[in-house]
Length: 349
Image (cartoon, rainbow, N blue to C red; front, top):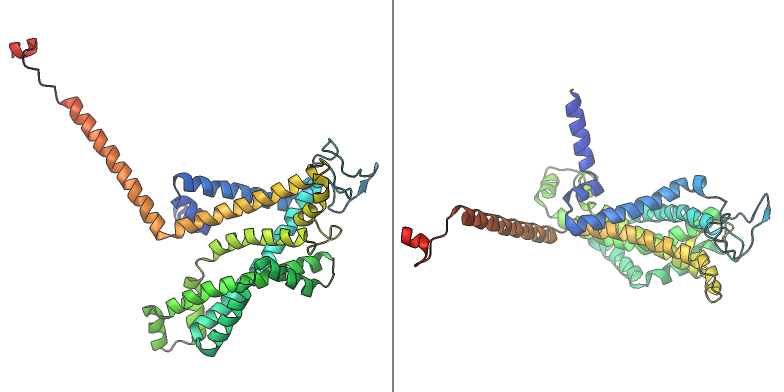
């Protein structure tokens, strides 16, 4: 096999990935939004991976070889973003907090996808009493405000635990309960639609088992919107995690760094002019959520055929106008003007 063939296959594989394929299809302002979102999200992930290397101190470190850290110290050469009321280094807390956010997002969204997709496939394919029961449960959960439901689940699950994995799992389970109905409803609707398609009916007529039909024919087609839902739910998970920490139901500072908890402790500092303890965790939340939201909304727009058709029509119209303008310019340049009556040129003619 030639090198050109292998490189061509690699290019086709990479171009088929969700984000890269959407980036290739995007144009104009939409491409700018997608690139901005990818840059912010990439910076967030880079901080997550490099936090152990670039964080000057540990997330719970209160002293070094020179002694204890001062409390509420303004940004300086030793503490670039200052220190909190508890003596924690703000920069270190912000960097380590990105790791906590990613861990909670991965655990929560992974569990939500697994449960939501599995229940949605079973409910949409088999229907009957199973479908009715699952729909009622999903609608009942979906009717509750997401943050209130997460608070209740956090209280039930954590029971005052403050360990690292105890706090993370409590937050992740709380967010999972909120997200499962969303995946369930989307996958169920797609499964019901695909079940009536000719290729699925043909598989049924040929005697294929239900497991084979679900796994080979329905699953792949019903889960095409998962990348979009993942990006949107990831941003919502960060806000829910920050909300739990801000209200005091998150992770203790001695167990892990969490942006919402740091914002809660910074409330009393705002009236005293100590701005650095709350600004930097808040900026981290805003930029991370903004990046994920821009990526999700851009993917959503590119997946909408109506928006794609409108943009194609607009592009064709602009190209047609440009071509018409060029043709008229060329025609005017090649056609000599007729001399006016009574002019010297007219007399000579």
